[in-house]
Every structure is written in structure tokens, then in C-alpha cells.
Image 1 (cartoon, rainbow, N blue to C red):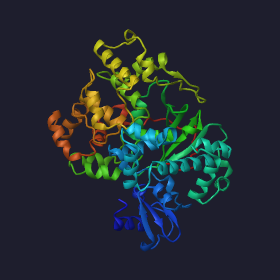
Image 2: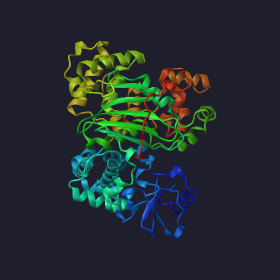
Image 3: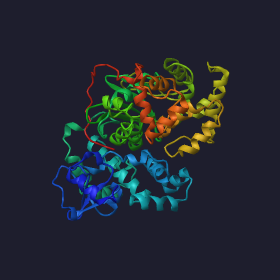
Image 4: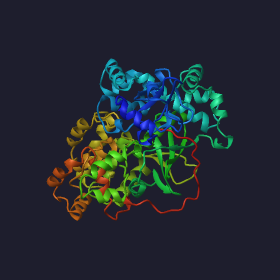
Length: 503
């Protein structure tokens, strides 16, 4: 979008928050870059230039605005609706791959050469993988400086910097303030004293309907791994350097997020996975506008706009749970998963109680005795084949997955039909166009609304909903009275104290 100058100028002059994250405005006279909704008086159009990413602005020598904090705007929805090389690379960089494995590691995960990855990122984003990762490290450093009492040396290495000098230089260059000056700007009472705990706001583009989003996560929560407590969805996280526990609570203009990490180096990855879990980088207006073109869907959208697709923090975990949920009730699927967690999950300490384990990784599940699984023999074969392929690496599910190729690999496994594959594509891989025409709830909703009820006819009708059929699934499911469609009613006894935005 940043190449459409006229449209960008109109968005800046109207301070339209819907475009935050889509592009960034750099002001030639002040050498500062802003988000489109910056509250200051807009600069003259002749003094504006536009970039597709904060990293590109920084690489061009612009500093982040201290008023609108463009580095904390929601992520571009572009990367969540595409499965090409650039989109997959962006998702991997957000997951910290460059910081852990370097650009060669990023290229290896994508199956391309380092030169190809760098060339395509530069062409589309105006910044290579190192610059994008550097911008992300700067955001993480700022968050740790402003929300924790950690010493600066610890923050530098937790944020992924190789040295304290690089940390200091980067913070000064990006924010025009030294690290100590950034901390001095924050009221003392906003810095929590609990070691390893960070509170923050996760921004999103309005509207956001939390009912089906949190209702689905709460209704399908696996005991020991997930729970709904005090108005928040809580779960354990398996992270690259350790583990974490997150509490996510819906608020009118943000998601309140409280993270407890065993290693602060996992902060960026944890936030990225939480945003992905709640589909916070979606563009609800684009989705809803497309679905409203169908006169039978329009009333559902108008009644409760802004539905998101509940996703996952662990793609392999979700695939396993999808198999456990084949042809059984939600309660039965939770019971099966809870047994696996108790027997094979990794124990963790939860300061608030309630959460006890990390969900077992494929390697642990591949080693269990198949006869110990309380499920029909055919589903047992499906389960053991899946965890075996995940454990040996012949099947990889992650943010870098090519949607079409992964679908084909899943369909080749015994017991994997279109429903299982598409629910994994929708909620684990993040395909916004995944569709479930054979799902009983979808067929029942279609019949009630007057839509075609047979899978083939419904698929033909749903062609007009593309590329947002996964969101249409959420609206169709919401016609039912199942608990997944309702935000759990429970009083919040422990208020959260988020202090800063982070994408």
C-alpha cells in the first residue's frame, strides 16, 4: 500500500487508525517516522514519504515518533493472508529465528538460498532480514526497559543484542534516547516488581468480537495446560529458551497480556505467538465487507462484527489435538488430551496455581505405547503416524509452512480427511481461506440460513467469500448455542495493569 501515495496521504490527514501497520509515514523535515493515526498535526504532503515497515524507516535514517510510537502499531495483516516466501519469512523473523539461527537459519527453514530471501525482502519491505530483526530487537528492548526493573546489561542480551554497546547504539539511533532516558520517562509505579512477569497491551484493529475467540479457547481448554480464570484465558507456553505462562484478557481497545517467563529472551517469541493465537493482526473491516456482500451472511456480520479465527501457539500441539477430537465431543477430546498431558507433559510451576504442565512434544508422544491409548484402533494409527512424522521431521508444521504443500502431506496420512486437514490449516497454519463444508455445525447453520446444505453446493456458494472463508466459518458456527461461541461469564478479581503497546 505504501506505493499508493494519494491513498496514504488521505489516511494520514484523516488520522485513520485502520491503516496503522499497513504503512509508515516518514517526515523529511524532522527525520521522524509515524503511524498514520499520529495525533500531531499532519505534515505537508510534500514532506511525507512512505515505507512498508518500521525497519525500512530506521534503515533510511528516520527515528520513531515519541507521541504515536509507530514501532508498537499492530502488525500488517498482509503477512497473515499470504503464504509466499516474504510472508513466511516475516512470520519466522517475528518468531525470533534470525536472532537464534541467523539469516542462514532463516533461509534453511524456508528452503531458499540466503541471497534469494534477502533480495525478496528488500524488494517488498525495503529492509533485509537483519534490519527487520534489529527493529524487532529494539522494540523488545524498549518494552523491557519500560516494564521491568532488569539491569540494562540483562536487557541487552534478553532482547537479542550481541553486546551492550550495540544495544546502546541501537536504542539511541531508533528512539533518539539513551536506554536510561527511556526508563526515566516511565512512572515508577508502572514497573512491576515480580521477577519474570511483564504486563503489556496487545493492540488490534477494531472491531474485535471476543465471544467466539475466547469462548472457543476456554471451552476446549485442556486441564493443566489451559484455563479460564478471573476473566482471562491462561495457558502454558513452550518457548525456545524455556517456558512461560500467559494470561490474556479482552478489553475494549486492547488485549491485556501478562507474561511470566523463565527466560526473558523468549519475550518477543511469546508475544508473537499470543498475537497469532488471537488473530490480532487481522483486518476486520476488509473481512466483514467481503462477507457482507452475501445477503444471507450480512445479518450475522452486522449483528456481531469483528470475529477472529482462534488459532494456536503450537502448531504440532494443535494437530495432535485435532486428531484426538475426531468424531468425539469437545469434552471427550479434552479428556483424551488431559490424560496425555498428565502422563507425558513437562511439569511447570504456576505461581497462581491451576496450570501444571506444558503440552507434551511430538518426541514424547512418539515414544509412548500405542496400546495405552484409549481410542479406536484406526484413530490410534492416525495418532501414532502423525506424532511419528512430526518427531522425525518428515512433517513440519510451523509459521513457515507452505499451506498447499502441507495440506497435501497431511492428506497422505492415514485417517486424515478434508475436515481434519482444513481445521489444521485454519487454526494451526493460519490459512484465512480454509473452509469446512462437511462440518456438521456448518451444514446445520447453512440449512437454517437458507444456504446450500450439501458440501459441494455450499463450497460453490462460498467462492464469493474468498479469501476469507475461515472467518465465514466463525460466523456460521456462531449461530449455534455451543459454549465455544460465548465468552465465559466470570467476575475478574485480579485486575491487570498493562502499561505499553507492542505488536
